[in-house]
Length: 108
Image (cartoon, rainbow, N blue to C red; front, side, top):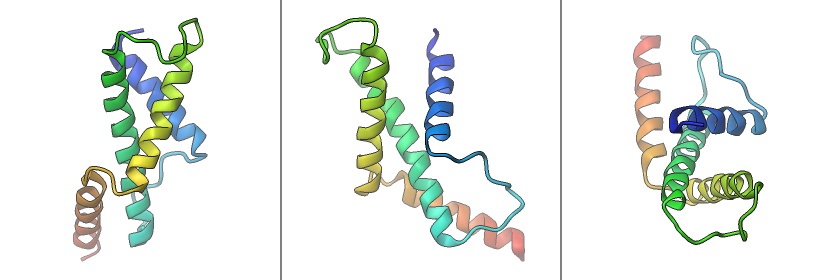
């Protein structure tokens, strides 16, 4: 599977595991919902970054085998969620601020 298709599949699985579909963009969101959405986006982004970083590693984390790619991907997603929840890299804050700004401008 190429990198783009792999990234799209991981993003779709990540969203499905969260039990959420795409929200209706016409519906106003509370600041808390916007911050949570921004954190989730940051976690997906970080999972992709970790996947790229771990893909370069020559050492096998789980001893090899056919299931290693699936489990290492899930591990990267969990690492990303923890990093994002702990404050992340600042991406969620910037996204939330911009989403709130656009929502306020749209309501005016």
